[in-house]
Length: 90
Image (cartoon, rainbow, N blue to C red; front, side, top):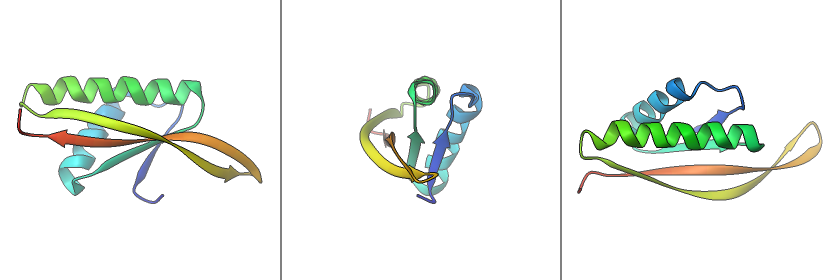
């Protein structure tokens, strides 16, 4: 999970949305990992904000989500990975 941005409940939405855009423009892909309702909320808000920013440049941001199971401090945790897809053919 080295290329995945981890999102926490206190993650700044504005900074995360900028990071989503820069990460995609730099490497062509972007993934977010969130565990817990607060972190998932921040991730969704940042994805929505990045989508609004990119719409001004005729770029459509969409994403799909999937469950991911990891172990933290010997405890199994279920999180969500958001994989971002951008479409310039709008």
